[in-house]
Image (cartoon, rainbow, N blue to C red):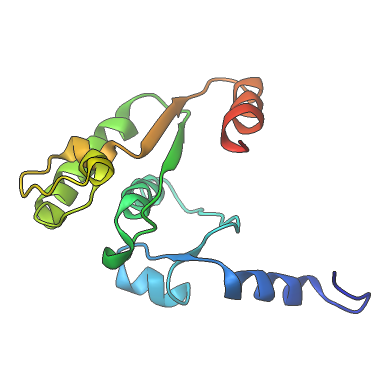
Amino acid sequence: MADATTTALALWEARASTSFVLPSGCESIDELLQGGFRCGIVTEICGEASAGKTQLCLQLLLQCCLPRSLGGLQGTACYICTEGVGSVKRLHDLAQLYAKRYGAVMGIGAKRKRDVPSPKLTGNDFLDGIFVEQLYTVNDLMDLVVCNVAA
């Protein structure tokens, strides 16, 4: 428990120093964020239209599922989609690129779970740990967060 003189910045710095870091896969962004995105801390990504916000988020989804040895968290991720299927198609395209880049590495996606080495991993193997939710209302969002993500 923090004492009465602890500042919000001090609390944030303490939390940030003990959380896992997810590299973005972009050296300049990771340098700006002192290594990448901190898990357990909300990071707002904003910018003009076509600045690459969605692209960055899609890349982070795939980075999250990579093994720790490749800079990932060896975890799962949830993508909340509110604008149609365009970004989901881009996610599939990015997954194909990740398959080419990391496909010869053991331990990704479904094959990681079965511990099956395979140099012929596909983009679908990289999507195995990513859950896409299409939402249309604030109530849909609240249901997802309360019932699924928080669990």
